[in-house]
Amino acid sequence: MRRARAGAGRVQLGKPSSNLFRFGDRDTGRGVRRLDTSALDGVLEVDPQARTAQVQGMATYETIVAATLPHGLMPLVVPQLKTITLGGAVTGLGVESSSFRNGLPHESVLEMDVLTPAGELLHVTPDGEHADLFAAFPNSYGTLGYAVRLVVELAPVRPFVQLTHHRYTTADAAATAIEELSGSDADFLDGVVFGPGEQYLTTGRFVDAPMPGARISDYTGQEVFYRSLQRRPVDHLTVHDYIWRWDPDWFWCSRAFGVQQPLVRRFWPRRYRRSDVYRRLVALDQRFGASNRVREALGGTAEEMVVQDVEVPVERLAEFLEFFHEQVRISPVWLCPMRLRGERSWPLYPMEPGRLYVNVGFWSSVPERPGDRWAHNRLVEEKVAGLGGHKSLYSTVHYDEDEFWGHYDGAAYRAVKQRYDPDGCAPDLYRKVTGR
Image (cartoon, rainbow, N blue to C red; front, side, top):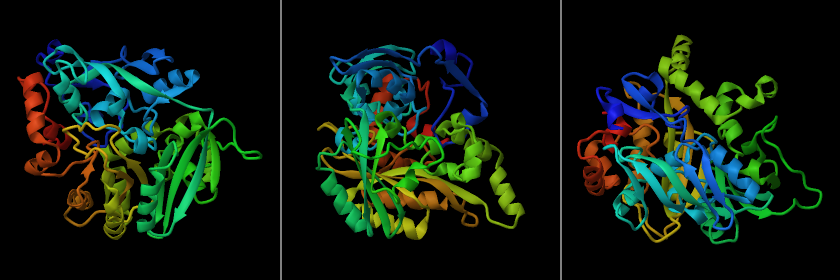
């Protein structure tokens, strides 16, 4: 890595796709030297007896799931989008409907090899010589190094997932139900909020076969998964299709491109109904500002992109949703209950062990406030902090530096940064995620 940096300025991984929503050098290619990671994208071994997989850091979850499902296994938490990499989910966090039971992706990592910014390749384990790096790696976004190989735990699966959609007319009722359902025998739990009076929670259970007479749904064709919550109290998917149920429409974001219109959908090739395709379209729009130019030319208002995942304690969920419906007004939003799997904490994303949180995800745009391009994003940050929650750092970040390090344990970060990147070869976390 030192050789790659010589006279080259900044260095990033040469990933073919990205799930970040900080549009800068990664999308423009200016001033960045990319490391070739093309040989680090595979699954090295699946051990069905030990229920583990040895995986290279740039392997996507699509690749990992394809390797593990034939053995009747899957990662404990599979983030929603096919092109998220294992290394990215560990250094940048991830969440899905098994997170109320299995925590976050980094909690199933048993060991990893990390290439540090100083150019060292280290074997990193929870209690070894580099345990401090193991603990600080989650939410460090590559500023402490890149995972080139990881060993992760796997969980057994059954052929199908039976879904039950429960409707609630108030956010308070939904929050109470989340607490109750998180203690049930469900294998999966998440939900969608369509408006203040319409919340759904979905429980998923592994089954060997659908109920007699039940159909097996397919949301990779003409139908859209999130709309089924309002129409089908009970549903069945193959385990493969359940894992990727959100990806064909990137939750509900494909509607911005007309892909949910039946006629458009019929002629939009199925192979392009993928989250990475939609994300590339958003990146192009952000680079050239095309949609805002059209809006303004037609006498409308430019829009602020509000793409965030935040988490708040379950007992504060109703308060956050009330604020969100009044101040931001994006619909739908995703709910994903989550709690740490074990008793240990992770300094750069300090959730309390044993405490139940709810991830709230929203991905759209709203009219800009005159003279304040990021007003709604800052409102969200302030509210989440006030409720004792955190926000993920894959999208825009607007905290000032002191406030940021107060939320993400600056003292712990600086100690590890000094040990593994004493010369500052990589940017620190605050500068990485804010671009300042």
